[in-house]
Image (tube, rainbow, N blue to C red):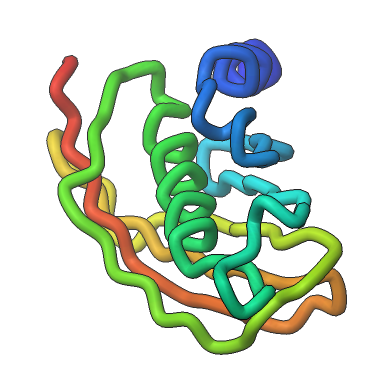
Length: 131
């Protein structure tokens, strides 16, 4: 599978990610990385990055990882623990497999700030609806 073409397609056609200053920056068979560039639009009412932005960034990393096999998936569910606030720079999500089944995958996602500190950690379950 040509992951560079997948990355180009993902970044061009995921309008929600583009709208929210997110991009897929790395993709292999075993890991996906997405990045949020923090802007004022990323903030909640107390001027830190909104937890929903973290959740979306992690969900997109999990989705990109499972789709690396060329099939189509949807998110079944996810949990994310927010550990540290972010006010500027970038946030990078790193997604890796905990389980890869025929129709269901479970993905661990860790989010890091520019200093490499863990800011959030979660687990996402993904369902394959195309064989």
